[in-house]
Length: 143
Image (cartoon, rainbow, N blue to C red):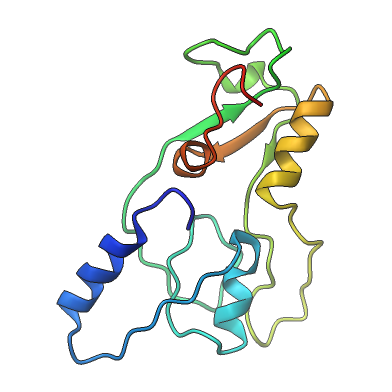
């Protein structure tokens, strides 16, 4: 997960479960649940919400959400905005299927980079987890 100290999470997991064999596998935000569904991984650290009714989810921590706006947007540079000020905000969510036996399929979610390009060339806004925004150095006036 970009923007989250994965090493710290893995160290703590290893400390709590020293009997388990642990290997890190990195994937995009949009592919995380498919890695669980098809058996490539047994456990995944994901950002909520995920459409994964067949999986057990344990919330580890809360993360702030930030608004991404273009540098030319009147909201750019403000310390805070209200949700109702955002024009049809894009959400960076996992849109994977609902589990290994589900017949429900959804369109793929755009990547973070695709969302930021859309924000930069349109009048739309996006909501991003604060860790991803910090990891990509998304700040007022920069994207």
